[in-house]
Image (tube, rainbow, N blue to C red; front, top):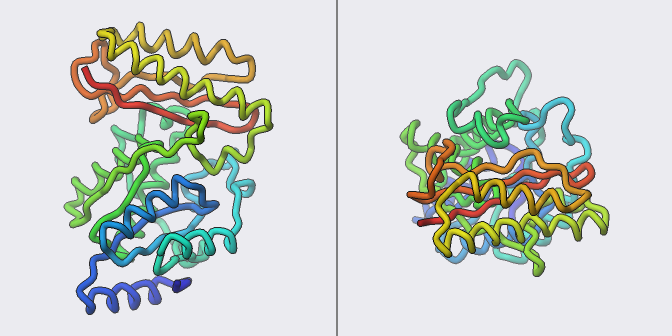
Amino acid sequence: MRILRTIAEVRQWVRAQRQQGRAIHFVPTMGYFHEGHLSLMRRARDEGGAVIVSLFVNPLQFAPSEDLERYPRDFERDHQLAQSVGVEALFHPEVGEMYPEGYQTLVRVPKLSAPLCGRSRPTHFDGVATVVMKLFHILTPDRAYFGQKDYQQLRIIQQMVRDMNLPIEIVPCPIVREADGLAMSSRNVYLTPEERRSATVLYRSLRWAEEQVQSGERDACTLREGVCQRIAREPLARIDYVEVVDAETLEPVEQIEQPTLIAVAVFFGKARLIDNTVVRP
């Protein structure tokens, strides 16, 4: 597996793959890989392209009060895991390579960035959209793979690609969960054992909502209140939001009449965890 540190090296690698007639399949990450990341890499590999993964902890998506310095990092472990699932190149740039001195440009997708996580992290998705746009221009992939756990991020990237006429297929991939239902996340390492047990309430509450919709419930307020009540029973849980929104626009709905996202963000100690499910009438 090639380790690429500079934009020039990446572009040279991409040219070499294209000269062999290979499609470029790309998985953007901030590292500290878990099974969720690896599932994206396997999907990219299984769909037949030359697989390249970026590993870059993007400072633009962290507010000054957030956990940029604490964000878990282990390059050697990530290198070995990526190699084990057939990744062919790992792009691991320094911050100065991505944002050289004098850098000014930001990419914004304002309507989709404002609700849900955007309310408590108002600059986060500008940083996400900016770094992904840069990576797309550097790598020129044919396909890019994103997990549905970060559903709002996925929708923002889909909208950005559509709006900017980028010739890239965005491939959504299912949430990968632990055996007890907790969605895999790099931030799970912040949880104490007691917080880790409590955090399973997120999946249990979303499953309750799914069952209610399957049984005929269509009132969004009833579903939202039921999920809130179930999470609030956990004394270690502190709710940031529970929302029921249109799966395409992320705007609030009153009735489940089309694909609908039920999304949660909850603090357990210092860890802010997100999870979601898409329900259909």
